[in-house]
Amino acid sequence: MEDNKALLPALLAVMALGWVVGWATTSGKSEYAIAAFVLTAILVNLYFSHLEKRGLVLKDERTLRINEIASRRTLQVTSLGLAITLLVLSGKSSNPKMEGAFIAVGLVLAVMLMLHLLFRHYYSRVM
Image (tube, rainbow, N blue to C red; front, top):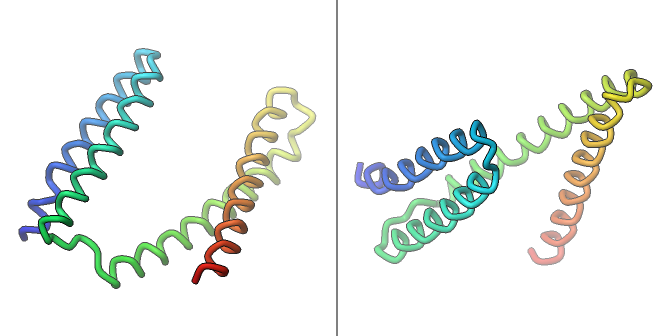
């Protein structure tokens, strides 16, 4: 129960971030959204560091394993979705409006898979 109460400030910070990003997006002030995201990430990270110094453990082996599995499934679903989107857009590549989307999806898929391979190579050497 105490763990859940300790997470409340972080939850409020993320909710405030959502409000600021929504406001900035509708107002056309994307620089505020980026600044709010960076500031919230720093504050939440500092808050979690403070909690760990106080001895409140938010992660254990089970939590780390669940995050690993969730990350793996997210990577698989995202790459599959991007690949299907790329195939659908390839049939419409003659349309000039779709050419930009085709290039963007292709680049995101290529960068994501390249990062995956680089991280896999790095961690296979480190671990």
